[in-house]
Amino acid sequence: MGVSVSANEVADAPQEARERTILGLTGEGWARILAPLAIGIIALGLWEWAVRVNEIPPYILPGPIEVGRTLIRDWHTLQVSLWITLQITFAALFVAAALGLALAVLFAQSRVIELSLFPYAVILQVTPIVAIAPLIIIWVDDIRIALLICAWIVAFFPILSNTTLGLNSADHNLQDLFRLYRASRWQVLMRLRLPTAMPYFLGGLKISGGLALIGAIVAEFVAGTGGRASGLAYRILEAGYNLQIPRMFAALVLVSATGIAIFLAMTLVSHLALRHWHESAMKERK
Amino acid sequence: MTAGPPVVTLRGVAKRYANGTLAVQGVDLAIGQGDFVSLLGPSGCGKSTVLRMIAGLMGPSTGSIEMAAGGNAAGDIGFVFQEPTLMPWSSALKNVMLPLRLAGTARSEAEDRAAAALAEVGLKGFEKSYPRALSGGMKMRVSIARALVTKPRLLLMDEPFAALDEITRHRLNNDLLTLWALERFTAVFVTHSVFESVYLSRRIVVMAARPGRVVEDMEVNEAYPRGEVFRTSAEYAAHCRAVSEALHGAMGE
Ligand SMILES: Nc1ncnc2c1ncn2[C@@H]1O[C@H](COP(=O)(O)OP(=O)(O)OP(=O)(O)O)[C@@H](O)[C@H]1O
Ligand SMILES: [Mg+2]
Image 1: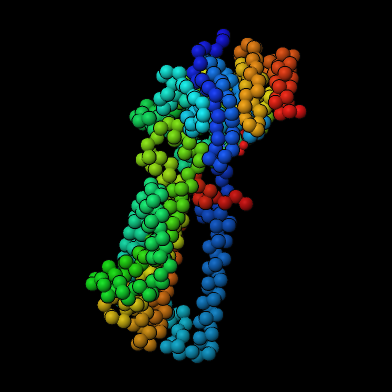
Image 2: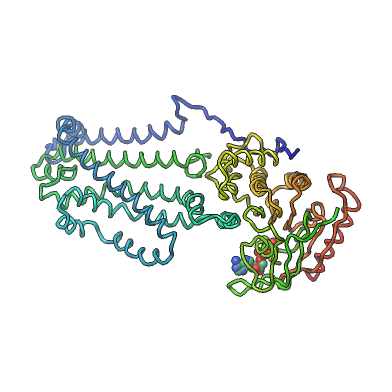
């Protein structure tokens, strides 16, 4: 009955070959962590040394140790601000992802809708956020909502344009196959176009994650002088006015750390979603 | 055994693409029930065009294509492309389940039938493998299993083995004949290869280019099952020579 495959046709067995690992990481994995870490430690050491040797006062340039100390001392205040900035960033990212995806699906359904709406998405994208942020802050009473809108505007476009591209990238033969089996529009969308668009969407999300943070910070800088917000950007402004430069640096460190964390989180999400099939999530083979 | 009444009949079919290319012209062709027909011809002679029109993926510009009664529902026609054309985000089993799921078959029933189809093409144990973990030949097998899972009356194949090495191709040719004898579908097989067409088919339709048309309709009246013995027989060589001559005549050499 039926037929069978002989061994030499099985060119690539399903199991992956195991590489030698140290504490769960390959040699290259360790290098990837340790090398940048070493550079970072050397740079911080040089910085601290320069500050001490030249006796630079902390209100001009604090050394990394002083910054660290401030970070711990002011943690209580900073942590509240960090939390606010995180909330705005993630809310904006979530709305951008949901709306970007929904709009991209709408575009994919109708060429007319795409042609009529896409230019406005582009306009939204190319208008500098610093220029429109003051207007939004005036128009929207709740400052958090205003910040959220600003962050959303910045984060929205990469998701929209990437996902639109992805939805239109479905393999032609697969499209014919779906047609052959009389698949409905809905089935084509759910089973072919959305899965095809997945890596594109996740790529957009990775870019938008960082942009949402930038949008939230920039908008708060614009709004900050009003003193109504108290995210990380406001702390930086406030510390600047009071010449609390170490605190300014501490807030800056938190902003950078947040950006890095968002990037890593998005990379992880993308890896988990694509690891079974997409080239980008495969173990590199060199 | 001879071919039964036609499952599909082409009458005076011509196809002109939107850009003005006249791909095929004046094609009259009836494919008999249970037959194994190869469309053979040089690149660009319109083999894929004819096959896609039979599949209903596009209509002819002039002429008519008529399917026998009861051969028109989704799943009555299977199609195998030159590339495996699998969904990379789905396992082999899920790929084979697709036609059934699109037709609204319940998941558990679709799973059983897809697993059976995979077993039939020799891929038992690879249900959970993703396409990228399969070799070219195995991907093609998944593609064939997907085309057969709906038990089609007509299986259309567009140079399915063109990208495979010689040994794998021979093996898949043998397995295709086994499946054909087992499932009793009607096969239309597009190929560049004289040898492959003679080995597989009972009827070879030779086409020529500019404009694409049918120039020769030949029979390979040899018994099935065919195996390595047939491949080395004098009859096989004679058929290959005859088909080759027809093909070169068609190409004006
Ligand atoms: N979508 C299309 N639009 C315009 N012209 C096309 C299209 N598809 C095919 N053609 C043209 O129609 C002719 C026949 O093409 P077809 O793909 O049917 O040939 P073929 O015999 O399958 O060739 P091959 O063996 O290379 O696959 C060619 O001249 C080709 O350029
Ligand atoms: Mg072709």
